[in-house]
Image 1: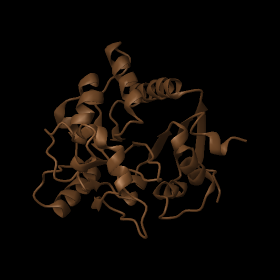
Image 2: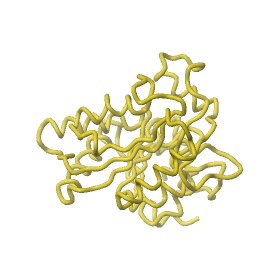
Image 3: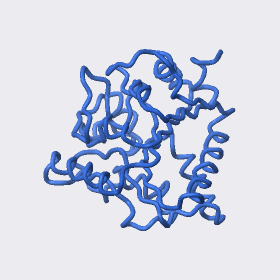
Length: 249
């Protein structure tokens, strides 16, 4: 495997990573205000989102022309549910950067038909001109969005059954009760993700070191969905020292 397309930057800690990436994104928006951003949820990007909110409060980041698409949402959950990813994004980013509701695109977990909702979402991304920058986290099992390790991966936005490990990692959104975490979700597929013009993956903490090492040095395999990023021509990987432990020379 060649890592020629994977640009890796290692930071001392999560805070330094988040501040550097927030500054970089703000500068990108200053140069090109109208951008389509693909956004991730979960613990990993929270500090980044808060740094972007701080920059917005200081007048150093302008989201007035940004259009967003989130990677995924729980199936069977309303956007108004406090456990939804939409509620998560409202709390950690959207309200902080004062982005207008009409600029936000989200999968509807309470849509009447999952397949129609997924098709609608792919069409909306295409209508917006595609995603310019896709932000990603990575699960401890190598999942991207809700694309879980499997014998085969879906290319387009789709309905997926969640692994128990993924449900456990999302339990905090449901007052720590794993039984309340939905068993299914809607997620952009790996093909949808790989169509982004540029991809930025963030990984922090020692629990991510093994899957980062496999992503960078291992084979492309459906057992590690993140490994498909090796196929993309423009990927940046931002790591703290703990997550980079497996690839340190």
